[in-house]
Image (cartoon, rainbow, N blue to C red; front, side, top):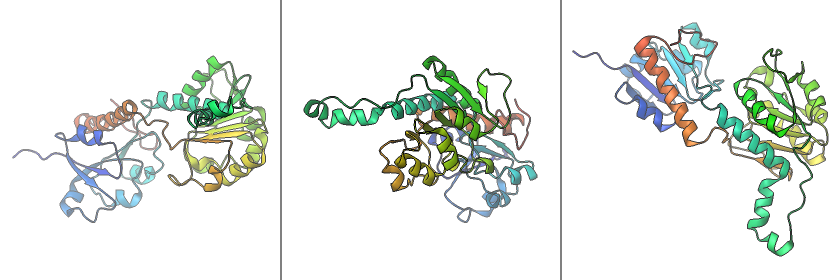
Length: 320
């Protein structure tokens, strides 16, 4: 009798290419919400999860044969890694394959925010250029700016590399100073915000980063300040940001992420000096395909070789 294929649960919203890559290699079962609709035998045999940042302890505890959680995305704050590690369950994510796309989008959002590119395009499309004259000069420029990166991991480094040709000064804050870069280091976010006039947030969701960009940080950034967030909405105090934008505490902001996505506070959207994107930093077909392929590759590698390609630090594993 042929050995049955490992059962992999697809949980929640995930790129369809993941299923395409798993079909034929695994028994793939889609789960929308909880496990109540599944047959007990499937629950008992499920050895892997492929999902988009959603594997709480309650789900993990219901799967006695679970060996691996392959997360679609770099961030995995929605995966209970402590619960996984307690049972020697491997967690993987999809780093590196989206670094370039997110970094490119960050530069685009920064330029769009500083030069009001969306407003300028709308001026043209609405016929105002022809009927009312040229679009107003943008009050801000990227010229001679001092850009501070809150976070200098893989994506932060790619953003910094892209900023260099713009001839801006670059500094950063992380928990510890990096010895492999020449950018200026500041030991606290407050010190960084005081020193720079442009702040780019690219930190993960952790207890330490919750509303780290608050009223004090924004005030330190100053009236010529620009704040860009492509990390997590969790890291910005949105009420403080709204107040800072509307009162002139800072000059402008650009956001790709929000605290309660897809909901965005109406008061924040009312700010005329805010540029917004609907969390699209990595949202291109080539990049999402590469992320999906890495999810599949981690699962295939685990069940073929007992090793994975991209384990997260909290659940160390043999890598191929």
